[in-house]
Each structure stands twice: as C-alpha cells, then as structure tokens.
Length: 449
Image 1 (cartoon, rainbow, N blue to C red):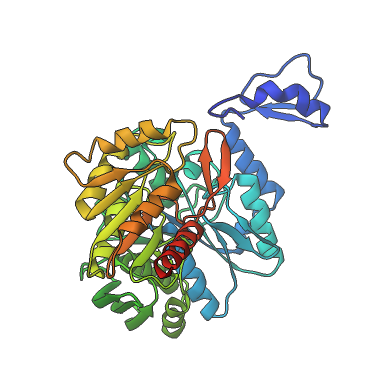
Image 2 (cartoon, one colour):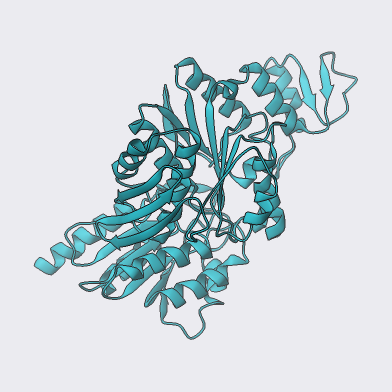
C-alpha cells in the first residue's frame, strides 16, 4: 500500500523473499514476477474486503455500535459498555485508550485499528460467544477504509469541532468523512442513528433518512434531554426525558459535556432495547474514564484534573466545567501536538487565557517539530494575557501546582490517559496523572517540613 511517507511497492522483493504467494497492488504487474498479481483501483479498500472475507464477516453476527465525532467518543463507548454489562451483556470495546474483549486487552496504538486487525478481533469476539461490541470510529479510519466492510447496527454522532485539519484540509471535508459512517460504508446503512440535535451538522445527518433516528441534546425538542441537572465534585445528578420514560441519573462523571455523552449512551440503550433499570445502574456504575476529567488527589487543598482536551472546543468545555464547580481560581497547563493541525494553536491559546485565571504553556507531543516553535504559535492567541511558558512538561505541571491555593482547580490538559511523551522519533514514559501525584507528594511533604 502507498502511505504518507513511503510506498509499499518498494518492498516487493522482501515480501517475495519472505514467502508472499501473491500481490494486490494499484501498480501494474511486473513481467519479471511469475506469481499472481491482482491490480486494483484502491489498495486500502481491497485490504478491507479481503480481511472481511478472510474472517467471514464477523460483524454480521454482532450488535456493533460505532461512535464518531470530535469529542466524547471514548466516554460514550465506556458508558454504553457499562449499561450493557448491567443488562447482562458482555461487550468488546475498541477506541483511543484500549482494545478490550475476549482474549485481548491492550493499549491502543490508534483510535481505530487497521481493517485486518479489526476483523481478527471481531472474529475472536464472535467465536467467544459475545454478541455486542462498541467502538470509536475516527475520521482517519473512515477515509483510510479501515472500517469498510463492517456492519454497524447503530451509528452515533457526538459533535464536530476543529481538529485533524492537517489531514482533511478543511472542516467540510472533515465532516464529509464522518458522514460516511451514516451513509453506509458497507453498502448497508446502520439501522439506527443516534444524533446530537444541538450540533450544527445535525440537519445534514438527519437528511440521510435511515430506518430510525433517536435524537439527544439539551433542547426540549430532543427525544433524550436533561430537564434538571446539578454538578458537584462528587459527580452529576440529572433527570432525563427519554423514550423509556423519565430517568433519574447519578454518575460520578462531571461537567456539561458528559450530559451529552450520557444522552448518547441512553440513545444507544434505547436502540438495543435495554430496560431502564439497567440504563440507570449502568450510568451509575461507571466510576471514571481514564484521562477524562480525571481527579488526581494526594490530600492537597485544591483540585487537580487531568483531561485529554486537545482541541479548542474540548479545552473550552473542560475549563468551563471546572469553573462551574470551583470556588477559587482555574489554572490550566496545556500545549499542542507537533505535526498536527497548526491552525488551532493560537485558538487554543486564546481559549486557555479567556477561560482560565492563569495559564502555563508547555510541550505536548512535539514529535518532529521544535517545542518552542509550537509554543510561539500558541502565544499568537495570548496577547496581553496572564500566562507563563515552561517548555518542560513536568516543570510546567510543578509551576501550576505551586500557584494553586485552597479552593483552586488545576487542569492539566492535552494528554489525558497517555503514558508517554513523543519527542523527535522517540517516546518517553510520561503520564500526567503519575507526574501530578508525584509533584503533589513533594509539595505536601515540603510544606510539612
């Protein structure tokens, strides 16, 4: 296959030497090779079709739920899994954090695996007797045909905001990639669409007109919406209007974005005919999602939150959620990833300074870019603001914690569940949660000396 940096056809001699029995390629056959050569128009589509056929189309035997959107995918999949478990159904989960199911449980390399890996994992799920799976579907995966051939029963749309423009080029292309999940990548549309009625793209998706649509959101016109809600540091209490009747919900998840994630998960539950009692207990059962508004505590007098927010929209929402339940200052540590959409960098800077009382700008995963150059681009949106630049991420977190007083909240944004930091072409062990806890221990012990 042709990639972004090289062409797999360059390695044909090695493949043949390693025992390849045939070749599928967009390139014309080489007369010098005496073996089967199938020329195709699209290598990635061919790979997906071959994988589905090889593993005998396992998703045809599954209740497969696909969740797409810019933010909220991971939490929604975890909520759906928890609801299914309370209803007595085991479910495989594949997404940004992990791939987990019968006989497999490991950290994810990417949000959505390649087609052969997906089909292999789903075959394991089916052969183990499991009948449910919920997965995140990234726009990259859709465009690169990784999910071609999968039979989605339910497709969920969370929201759309600026992200991945380095790959898609513009917002319309980004949305059109997401939209393909709902128009039927396999030639068969999902049986149910669960749509966020508050998102500006709702009408475009609603016009696809599949057999069934369930809407959720904050507006009363949505089939699923909270009529009352209250946030606190112990979680969220809410009353939802739903097709199942009125649901009283208590969850340890915090913040307004989670009201949407809960609504989406209820929509999936309705589509799968899950009883209301299992929905309520499933929502309550989920204690937290790794790196999503995750509290870090070492006995300090202020709150520390680690969150994966790495887009301007997500950062704005997490800071507003923190503000809503914080009596003191909101302090944020953040950066932007290298070799990713550069246009969002000054926007992230503007959001951070507008929504926080003090910001510490640092490195994220600079990859092959210079960390200070990324920071300078972020600073373009922070003119006149109160902030500090500390390029070393550990020292930046230390700086933010040192600024915090009783009643304040420190938000460490961007990396969430990640356990590494990528600098150049190497990845180093780095977990915001672990680092924050270590520095809090140092801070507390130092104050007591």
